Length: 173
Image 1 (cartoon, rainbow, N blue to C red):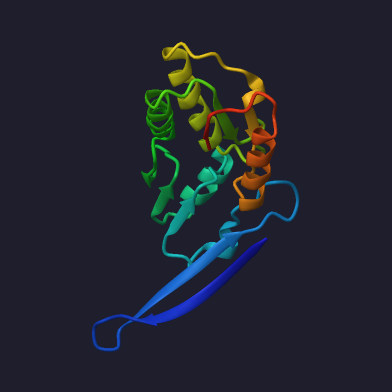
Image 2: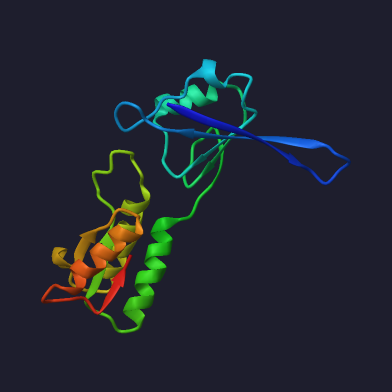
């Protein structure tokens, strides 16, 4: 379930050492991995959690370690965090396409049934749809293709959209 690596690196001051650990969670059963106190207690000084939001049970487990936790790409009341406002970003990008005169805008989005609870695709889709509605543009579900946040998935989705008879004049991905 856990793969951890330790690395020592030299800091600028007289031979002092900074110890850094990289901890990656890999699920062994089902889509989620669980933090196990006994494997981390005393070995990790802080956690940085990136992109995929933990469940409340996982948050409780991490908070129980009594170490600082920083979140990237999500928020939680008991942790420091930094995240992008994906709704606002999608609104800005889509409004730009509308301002350029595009009326048939396609969407490469993520699956709404994401098993990891990754909110970015849905937040981006919401911002996109808000601008279309506010601009009075017609939305056709045939202009949406699901990608999987990989180069191959994006390429497949773009090919799919561009091969359709009523192809879009612009695409938000």
